[in-house]
Image 1 (cartoon, rainbow, N blue to C red):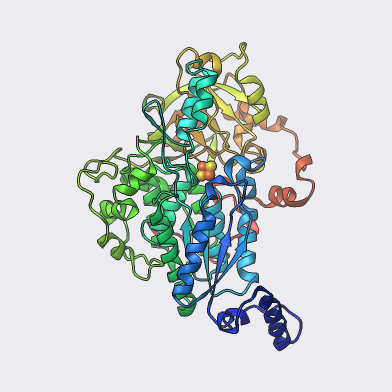
Image 2: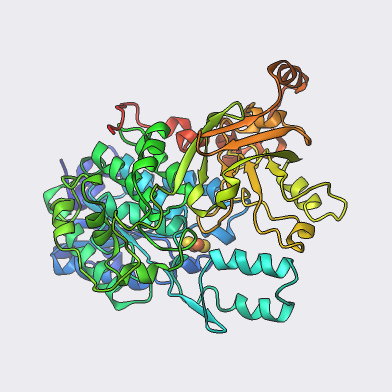
Length: 572
Ligand code: FES
């Protein structure tokens, strides 16, 4: 197979001419024949003025290029879409699959023997890894790394768990306008990704635990020199892989790797988004994530990492305590150490080199965990025939078994209009229900599942209520929140049948979420629902593609035609 510049020639009918033309054009950039005859390592560039999480990408690209050249390769940087959580309308998830397609097609279209993907903000690493799994070219992942922590009045602050806490306190009248403005400038004190165990940190930890990035890649803070050295080392390794032709993503992304990733999500108190993204990545390979297996792992894997929102520390503390290698070591035989990594060996080598940090308390042992069981549980019931997820490690324990009266919001705009209305009929034991917020309904399944506590209840000191929806929730959020109800209401799911005043039973111990309304009445309500036509927003372009082909949460929300056709179940 052709390598380097000869790879994937543009079709002019005459291969010799195609190469001649390609070389003529690239020489306009000043490259020599020596440079052009080297193995090529492509490097994605997701720098964007709209993406502060990726603010250090130019520095990481320079370091990765240096590493590639030190190993005798030729680096070539190319742009792809960049997505930031706060700058993507209607929501970043709406664009994840577009980024995955863009990245995959650019890897396929341009000549490269290996690729380095640099990303971090929530949807970027999932999109890039989905692309890498489909393109199946030797790939090294470099996460951009977490922000360092902020400080306010002697308190340590972090995006965005504390963003929500501070905003709730402001809504409840506990923090005035002047102070909330001051805190606003301190929550994100550096470039890099949110420094709690949100989706970005979860996906970086998963990438490292699956062997897609070099050891410690997930946790080194974004501004640290060590991250730049990791980028250089990743560049070197990618150049070696460009020559050897492996390992390929599909040799790394094995059944063992997917199982390890699920163990790690549970053990780190990971983001609920993590399981959707992992499912989408698995669906790009011959493997499959099974929610029953994920739930079963949650019963045997303890939470070992003491990070917000489940615990109290931040990513830099996890890093200084030994990072993912030390976590894998503590997980012992819950992890399959024979899984391969891009470093060239297996997780056994990674664990053997794990640093011991005397006195650290951020990474616990299985005999002294933060929580004896994993972070997440999967619920089923007549409200969620194909499943729903709850991060019970960040919930209020007394609400995990709860029956209450439904207060229904028909859409996100409906919720925004009514949640703070003084005349809203709601009490602290009610269950807030949001629907039409799933992959098709919103669209893009926004992180609206963290319904705010109605202002009048917040002012009475209510900090948490049971909230359920077909939406997602930021991994940085906390509360007794049931998410990803599948199928979503806009796809005919039973969430669409709930009426204000109905009783709902949440039974996390029994893994159930049920609407306590008899079947005959539900059938009557179902018959009353009209046929849903193509919504106006989905009439053209990318929106139409998404509406017509996006899968439900239990399938990873990828486009149905992007999944691999060869499947085998992930072994437990
Ligand atoms: Fe980018 Fe949180 S906003 S990781």
